[in-house]
Length: 444
Ligand code: GAP
Image (tube, rainbow, N blue to C red; front, side, top):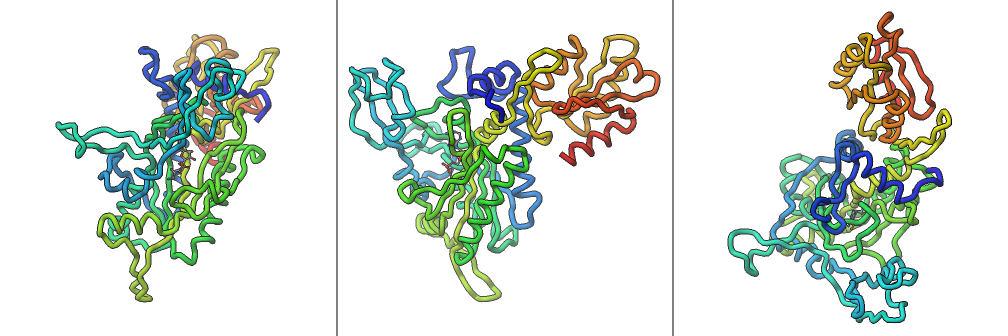
């Protein structure tokens, strides 16, 4: 990542180019909630697809799940969330704002932004009290105590609740994992920082069930695997680090956790947590449901509750890290350009097809090329504005290759392929273009 990137620049680019919009903007927005625009949706889908490919598709020991956002309320008693999923909160009696007591040094006093809450001359903070982060709604026509349900604060519990179903139907035995991607909701006290921390977000979670004596080994294995995933997708090694939790930081279920942290413009922050959850979840759900949630090994006659290793990543947070890391500015032909040097597997658009001029049969050939590429990869046709401007537009959204149809193309059915990073132009026959681009994508 070059030192040119700031969060403000990333937010501006995201808005300008249709990656991320504030939710309900026409109504003045809804605190810290975001919608993904056309390019943002493509990018987000690619992040999720890459995770699914690495964690499920390319492995024999992980299967997928898509559980409901609403679960039986007992789930959250069993998981410990109703009791323990809290953050310490303080109110300021002067300005009426609320802050996380453990993050006061990251917040600003609304009346005197140069100081932290509690440090201003008029600040009057209350004692800290615990605030539960679960968002609730009610199910059914009558709204009363018994109709309250919770929007899941993590996807993991849907996996534990289905442990027996999956074990029986997928014919797996530990070590094996269940993976899930989906929305989670938390009534966060402090949001800000764009899509880094929001109240509605997506998670990519794997619960990997192992024989207890193997837990430490698998914990180390998944730390390395998950780090490798980010590096393979181009994240700068010097912006990524593993940080083991101190004992007093551990969640209520965890015996060991390490965070993969990324150096955001605001500093090192958590990208993903990898935890050894032990047998906490299966035991608790067994206790609260009365179901046996264990594995019986017919070979050895042994019966045990597996331990769980959990790599838990945020889709939105990973996307933000990839964009921040990829953001760059340089100068081309005396002009400043913004370029997203995203890994080609992540970019919203893989190839832009551009006729040099809007005449002489060039648009027709360009459309033919675009139609041939579309079934293979996300292709975009653009004939509006100077060729330089069109290249800049594609650079800004990270498109790795631009195919230009020029005068020569009409004579010999060849086109130029421009590389986003090296700017090198290569002539390729139209008929060979699909295989050529597919090869470059596969090699990236
Ligand atoms: N099941 C374990 C679990 O949920 P977590 O550390 O609370 O662990 C895992 O969350 C990941 O989910 C985080 O590392 C982060 O990437 C993402 N995440 C958590 N809260 C978030 C929020 N409010 N907004 C965006 N992403 C969030």
